[in-house]
Image (cartoon, rainbow, N blue to C red; front, side, top):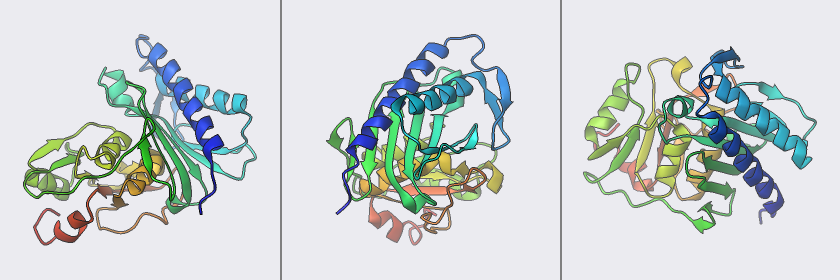
Length: 270
């Protein structure tokens, strides 16, 4: 039986709320999009991302936890802990900068690889809705259990990352779906599948360097799995062995109903 880690979950809830608060204060600043540094992954760090990460680390210090931190902006921050907190302080930064309501803070606690994540918490930075899961204990939204939905071919909703770098597979899936959404926030879109608001999510770009980092998906992947869904790369390969390292990138395919995995290929969806 999985150990009770409610105390650790409570810490993650408070950290998420703290970061949401500073992001809401910073979102109207005229300097929110100023580039202040280059992130550990080589991409520009805007002021609002830096503000969120500083608050995250300050909150962890205030909580008295010694977890190491892996963040998109700072990379690996060694704090002496046995657990590793994999975090994206703002997933959906471009949405935040443009006033679009699809962004989260993503927090995942575990060890070594994606399969070693034990706790996942994702907080909607716009509404404050909080999703979480502990491995083996189900998935929840604001305290209520969530579950994936049954897939009905020709009546589905797919979340697909589109644009000039999307692969033919992404365009093909979009063409097959009854309804398509592309929200620009991987964790949020995976959560939509987890709570039955969609059937599958695909992020598959034309070069690996344009695909997703483990910081984008670590928490949402666990929540999706605990809600009854599954996650893999575009080739249907399991992502459990994906290292918790900032340099790792992967295509991502998440789905709710096991029937989708069994039938999507033969039916020509992927």
